[in-house]
Length: 219
Image 1 (spheres, helix red, strand yellow):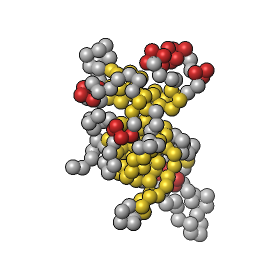
Image 2 (image 1 turned 120 degrees about the vertical axis):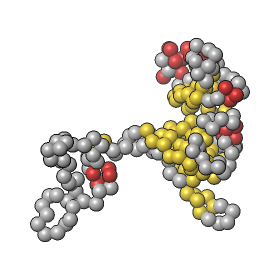
Image 3 (image 1 turned 90 degrees about the vertical axis):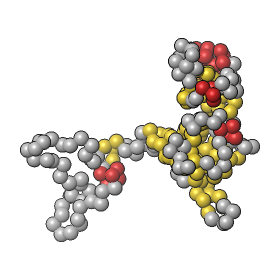
Image 4 (image 1 turned 135 degrees about the horizontal axis):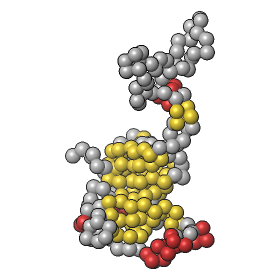
């Protein structure tokens, strides 16, 4: 699969550190991509109208699968999956895929290349401007009373007479789709289908992420 949009779904296991050949320590996030199964292949010539592959990841008990989903899994000849998503690909990549095929890390990636990792960031609830936007807070000198962590003025007087959209204010922090681009894929463990990505990726340990070839990789 040579397309720059090709990728796999995986589970974030946590972080570790490995040593490079020159002895430098590299902090890495471990992502398990075992069991990426092709559930459906969509083509531009079909009723779908576009080229994409539908992947299933992470085994699911049949007793916890509703009848419509169970019928789709049975039609594809695979066991039920918890995560079902699709990735758009080129026509050449689609032609090499078959329903029921299990993709491994080495089928998509090579060590040393750049990847983009997309996931759902950790939800931190409703937070203030200091935690959410890294405000430094108000001065803690004599006379300041209950104003240490406030955001300051938000008004604009008569013109335009309202709070500007996008103003950094308290609110929901995290629990949003986030993508970290151009991370280095340091190591691939083919035996256990693990990816070692240098740096941190969105989401908690055990969360689902999508790993794709970097779309903005520098030549």
